[in-house]
Image 1 (cartoon, helix red, strand yellow):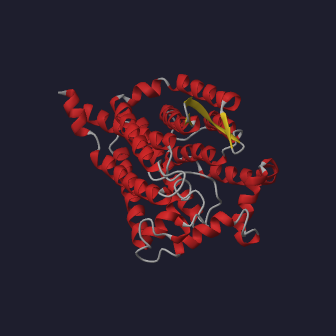
Image 2 (cartoon, rainbow, N blue to C red):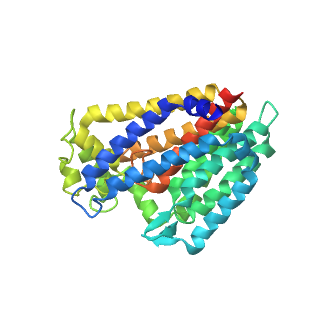
Image 3 (cartoon, rainbow, N blue to C red):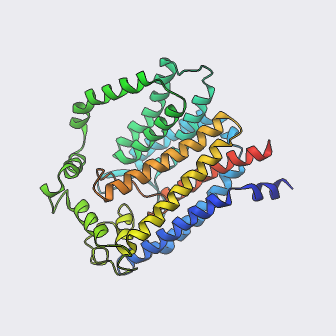
Length: 363
């Protein structure tokens, strides 16, 4: 009876919305790669989605309170795996972000560490019994999140490390962090900007310069953004049609099945397609927020809202990147971009949301 109730009470609306976005992603991956060396990517993505659904079911079946109790162990394991990536991980295009699993399969550990950061922030903030967050609590939590961020930056993967910060900032905002701390943090960020700039890698500096002025190097650092904006602009109202996008099919648009999949989608499905996709993302976020509002406790609320904050951040940055309103960071678009680690981890987050939901029914 309990199993039936759990299956019945899962948020099938949330799952259906996610699968619709995945369907749009698979369609665009097929279109963008059908006459290239990546022509098998679309059916591999279907496999990743299937594994993601399994991950969602597993996480939904586990009481999130049990996971919160094991946050110290999960945190230590996360740090150990991130260190292992730096020591023995596969190096591709100058970055060491993946651990080889079997054959050509690789695991991007940093994607799954997001789950641990969500649980860490939720547990810490839920344990604060005071009306306001004290400075010592803030320093402790920031330090705990900063350590895995530093390890991911070392890979280097600035984009993924920023998602950890997004989770933290979402939690602190919901916890009612005093505006004085926000102001102090903003001032500190401005003061540290010159030091941060000197520690950026050359390609990261070029991406920021290209964001400010993409026409400065149209065939180099500014190429991706320029081609992306041309692709989206050429989509018009209804788009050029599946497998018909000129920038995508003629390979002017870089990595149209991963980081720039939204550009390819906009070119081939137009303004109408973009509105439909963004509308689905909005509904996904609202469904997660609804589960947060009905969570049985503060920890459950923080889990759901940190998932929502993370997804909003990734969608905002990726879409902003492809239209030239954000620097190129390499962050994938949830549910749509090709990639196993990202797809499975995002569905696992939906599993956490469903775990919170099922505990409400269980109580």
